[in-house]
Image (cartoon, helix red, strand yellow):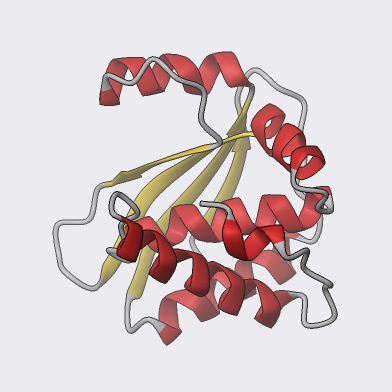
Length: 152
């Protein structure tokens, strides 16, 4: 399927890889893209913070950074780095299940590869709606707290 999962400087193993990979592939197809390769790298805050400084010039903690290597339009070739520490903290702060927060961050990173941005308020609204739409496809019985709809 060409979706791979790695851990850097942290002991983390994604559960239900086949189910998650099938879901991510479905998102890609629904958006009209073709998957070449997609890598998810799970890491601690320090690891992602260093990448944020080095590559983006941002001296802040973040939960996800996406690197797009695709040279053809409508193809997915990229890396999605996710801080497991940030995901855990955000899950607590927003009163969400850890798994739901992780899946939300994973699809958020993928949405960036699918050309969605979140720099402006209208872009943030669109990407948030897409996150919820696709998360509900993976977890249709998930009770999402209202804060999911209002935090960006």
